[in-house]
Image (cartoon, rainbow over all chains, first blue to last red):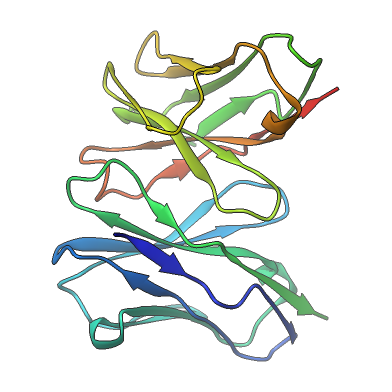
Length: 114
Length: 114
């Protein structure tokens, strides 16, 4: 069965601190995709990154970086030098080839304090 | 800019009174989704259209229906809203294949039931 666990319900950091959001997943498939989405207070879900199961390279995009480790079934997200605009709920999600939908984690609410 | 547009942003209806939420897209994506998101929870897929093919999730109540008259538009009809249907409703689109491509979300419609 598929499952995505985001154990951190809420995190608060002071501006300019680094913060890592954890995501652990379960799947029986060998081919799958992992995603991170950001949901700011305005409500829309914003796509951040997609990673397929065969690509374990870490990725950096500006202040954002992602660490994918199949050995621990984790796909963690780090924000460097956090800013107030980073305050949002962040969702990790899993999709399996052949399935119809994304399996979302329960989200982590990040608050960046000025 | 190409986008997913949901109207209205806020909808108030009475208990039992039918309501329709709309979604339009300029991305020309062939897959459209409707999600329900209750407070502090992950989005939950209700159904999706793959072109004209309608795919209902097994646990979506019969009270929820959808129409997709053309590629650009998709509607969510709630036939007899109950208090438990108060939520944010998110529309999303993706290119084919749906479990691989990122989903692009609208701003959502927040539904309140009186």
